[in-house]
Length: 439
Image (cartoon, rainbow, N blue to C red; front, side, top):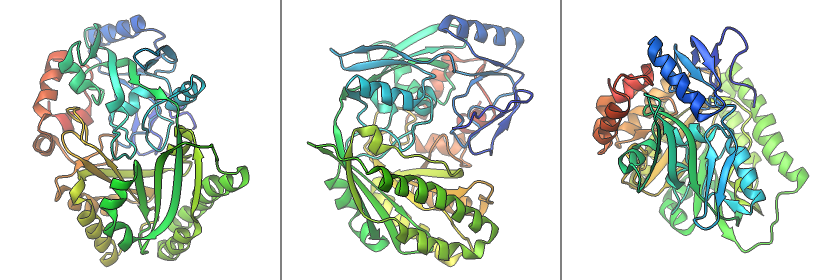
């Protein structure tokens, strides 16, 4: 990962390069007390405040013209409680450091997303998730939170302490305060066996419900302009560990998935007419393989090709219909899509603004190579997803506003009521939050 903070004039850019902000100043507090002081001074000066992690959100959720909080110094594990099987970690800690530290302790999160470059607070605040039949998003594994509110109060919340805040702040969009520490449920480290296998679009959609039911973690990628998919099934294993070989793993994860794919995307951007042929070749390049390793080495993969993304969560029963509609739209349009479409699932959870709040969900994510015009494709996809009562991922490109979202989230009013209480003067506001939460 390169530093997402530009080196000139305090300009901030996200990872994809589609969001830029010029804050009045940048602060890097080294303690909770220093952070509280930063918030009080910003409030006295009439400046807004936004924390920003590694910039992996594709929306402007972290953008500000006021004070930008860098979490670089708020990192590390505060403590491991083996009796309650929890770990408390500073909010600026990158997930990759958390995963490695837990592994050294013989522990693991139950589920995680497919990248681990984000900070802990950034990942949970926007609803980062992986795929799972029974285990949900990263935020759903939280057991307690510490955040500093607009008036500098350090507020600790859990199911037993300030439960109304806990119900909302686990996915808080940075609207309720600045998270300073997160307590996660953990379990003894275990092994996962990953089975990757090509499959046709017709077969994977026909068998989708069965594939989800039979596997702890199932996901697949459909390659537009083809009838080809690549599936991945992750299930717990008694072992022994059998990670990918050094050479074969490098070929699959670096050469093909990053190096060759980067060249293919660059060629497709320059010559869009070549994309269908490239897609047919790419979809046949990845072969079946099986390997077994500890969770974060199976769940996560390097993502070095930069892109922009839109993702919607649908009621799980709507997934196949929406996918077939999406495929038909691409086939009858002049669009040329160089990136595969990603499909994952999650069980219902109890977080107010979780995309899986109150319903079993399927996620459909579409991507385009950075620098490629995306508006026509994403607009067409969004029209399909909203037709199925889709909920947009908070950190990925979408055009929904508070009017739509209030109708899609039964507990939307619960969230905004907590926001009104914790941040009545909107210290943490920005244009994105005004659009999605109202003002």
